[in-house]
Structure formats: C-alpha cells, structure tokens
Length: 339
Image: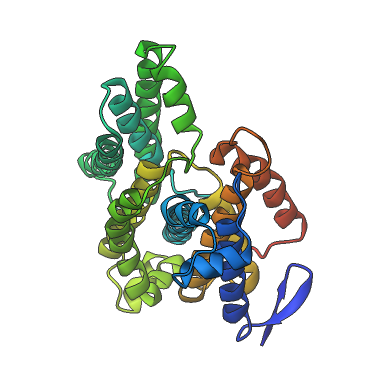
C-alpha cells in the first residue's frame, strides 16, 4: 500500500527506514554544523576514540552531542504530546499547551530566574509548575463536575493558562531590567544554548515516563478518536484512559519546556506532517511523529546557531518556519480528521 507523501508516492513499509535515515542525517548535520564546524572525519575520529583535533573532541562531547540529543528528545516529546492531545480531543488544531502546561512551566522558570536560583533549580521549578498546572486544571474540572467533558477541561486549561500568563507578565515587570529581564525574555523564546550532559540526564527520565504509556497503549488510545461510546463498546474505559494520556502528554510538555523554554509549533505542525505518511491511526502516527519531531527540532536548532553571528532563539525559528509550512500543508489538501 502506498500513501501520498509530499511530492511523491511512498510505500508504508519504506516509510520507517526513510524516516530513520532522515533522523540519522539530521543528527549528523546537527553535530557538524555550528559556529565551530566539524568535518565528518573529525566526528568519526572522535567517536572512534582517535580525535584528530583535541579542540574538536571538546566541542563534540561537551557541547554539540548533548545539544543534539536534547533537541531530538525535546522535539520527540513535543510531537508525541501533540499527537496525543489531538487524538483524545479529536481536534487537529490542538497543541501541547492547550491545557496551560507551557504557560505554567514558563511561570515557574521565570519565577526561579527572578529569585536568582541556579539553572538546575530553575528547570525543576519549571517542571514542577508545569505538572502542578495540569493538577489545578483537573481539580477545577472535577469541582465543576465536568471531568468527563472535553470542552470543560479545555476551557479550564485556557483559564489557568491566562492566569499563568499574567504571572509571567508580573514577574517581567518586577525583574531587574539590566540582568534578569533579558534572561527571562530569552528563555521564554526557547533556546538550547548552554545545554549540558546533566540537563539531558535530568530531562530523560521524565520524557521516558511520558512516552512509555503512550507507546504501550497506542492501540487503545487510537480508539478514543472514535468517541467515548464506541471506545466503551470495544472494551476501553475512555475516561480513565483519557486522564492517563493527558498526564503523560503533560509530563512530556513540562519536561521539554523546563529544559528548553517555550518552543511553539512543533506539537502542532509535526502531527500534520506525520499524517501525510500514516493517516490518522494513532498506533502508526505516534512513531512517525516521534522521528519527525526529533529530526525537525535538530535541524532547526542547527540553523539557529548557524544562520547569524548571534544565536537565534529556537522558538522564533519554529514560528517562522511553522506558520508557512502549516499553510502549505493545508494548501496541499491535508486529509480531513474524519478520514
């Protein structure tokens, strides 16, 4: 069976190897590109334990590899969260920040910057506030007896996101304009500058904890797109499964935001790109979205540190690329959600 991929026809069996090859190429490009470019010989020699240049080895192990791995993890996490949210809410316009997770994590991080905390503590505050945001949203929805209604949960998320956004504005108003305010502004635009191996190690457990249930339950999750009644008929407890998916996707989003700041469009754009290859089936869509999200984020991050003398924030580039690309996907006649 073949599907229409942008510009050509591709077999469903050929799609995974092509995506894996593309992800490998993207990560290789991400390792080599930057203010200090590395040649393939330098990369291969350093990875083999025989670095031809000691300076290249330092750049590769301490700067470039942690950043590329972090970009791949964050892109995969945001793409998986986007696919999960769009499936359970049955809406292809839903993004990972639909329940205020990005805003909550952002508020926690900027509050840490205002308090002058170390980087690791700032990341932990972003993660904790992101997870706390979803807890608050669920608590409000439960108090309103609307936990089983998707619209009520989304509206509660929008209200809490507005509160978190107001908190961010207040923190920016109180911040030192010469020191803290530039750091807050740069962080909110999203960036992987300064990523270290410890940051990757800190984010990895949370990202894996969010991905494991989505992968393990991918067939059941796909049934939620049919509606609650149909899912129950097929033996799936829709309410509990939806809550689990929301928690997993929230964990992924909070982990990504706590490390890299607010990076938009990945969770909205990548699921649509993946559907061109797989169609709407969640069990097929999830792994393709993971590969695409990882590869795209690695390439955008490589461009962010290469196109100008001063590094461009990652969130700006994803917005610049995401808007036109999303419109192009719509212009090509992306399949309707009902197909």
